[in-house]
Each structure stands twice: as C-alpha cells, then as structure tokens.
Amino acid sequence: MGYALSWLAVRGKLPEQVLADLNATPTGAEIDFAERRLGGRKLRSGWYAVFAKQTDHPWMDPDTLSVLSASAELLTCTVDEHKLFTSAESWRAGEQVWQVLHDGQQGHDHLRIVGEPPAPFASIAVDHRRLQAAAGGAKAVIDHMFQVPPKLAQRVTGFKHDEGDAGAEALWTELHDGPVLPKPAEVAKPWWKRW
Image (cartoon, rainbow, N blue to C red; front, side, top):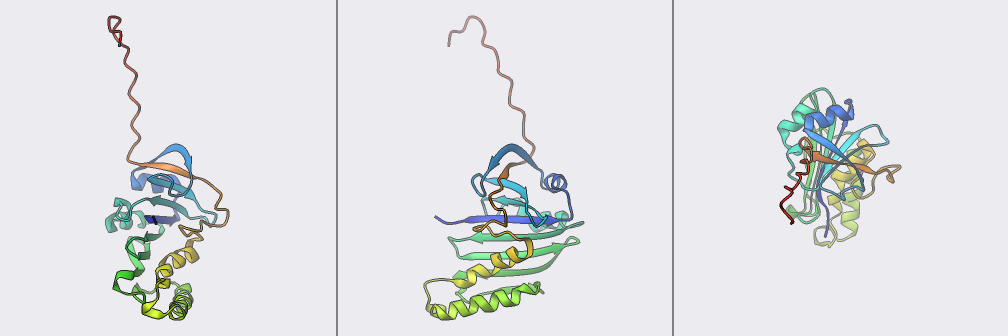
C-alpha cells in the first residue's frame, strides 16, 4: 500500500477559523498522521495543517481554497503513490499563486509549473533531475521527480507527509467534516420488554 491523501496548511488564521471555513469539527480524539480519515494540528512552523485520506476531498476544491485563502496564506499538497501523482500549490487573497505538479504516468521527468514557485523550487528540481538521471533517466524504476512537489511543500511549511515536521511526535486531532452530531439519548425499554 501507499499514500493517497491531500493536506493543506494555512498561515494567518486561527485554527478555529480554518475549521469553521472547512465546516470541520474536532472529535477530541488524538491520532497519528493519516491514522484516521481526517485530522488537523498546528505545525511547529506556525502553519495550521489539516489532512484528508483522499486526494479529491472537497477541502481541495478550488472554490474552497479560494474562500480559505481570502485573508490568509494557504499551501496544499496532494500525494497519490498509486498513480505516481503529486502536486503542491499556493493560494493567497483568494487566488492561486503557483502550482507544481508531477504526473508519473506522463513520464518520470514530467513537471508542470503554473505561476512562479518560491526560490527553493529551483534547487529541489535540479537535485531531483540529477537523481533521476543517475538512476537511469526515463528508464529508471524509481521516479525521483515524484518528490519535487512534496519537498517544496516541506520547504515552505516545514511538513512532509512521510517525514512529519520538526517535533513530528506531536499527535493530530481527529476531525469530522461537518458538525459533530450529538449521540442519541439512550431510550429506556418499556417495562414489559425483556429483550
């Protein structure tokens, strides 16, 4: 098995505001990263991150990202190890600023760049192109370019899905996408029912 997930990190909003914008509610349970379907926590870098164990969660919809980034800085990362697909993108003032996307099904050297990624992108891309060439280029078994978007997201936020962040031993809070409904009250059985 491999990862198929998405995560986003927000800077410039309180965690409560982020959760309200996402219509997410903490369940109160503490979990490890990707142990459950949804989770969130403040990263040591100051960003507040949430993850979903699916690549197409509604939180990753451009309309949602636009609203969430209207008054904050936002970075998203999607990783699908089954399809050799990764992407990282930044949003600010309700608009996408840049995106770096790798689709291994289009070739090991595939990278689509929209906008102007931050400065660390250039060195990350060069390093991974060298690794890809050393491994045999397009004929290599390993797809090194797969790591470019997640590594870029890590350089920006301090977090990478398979490495955590500095102090990664911290637990995540399980989230529910939507309000948590109260548990129904236990209905007392009529006196005449034995079962």
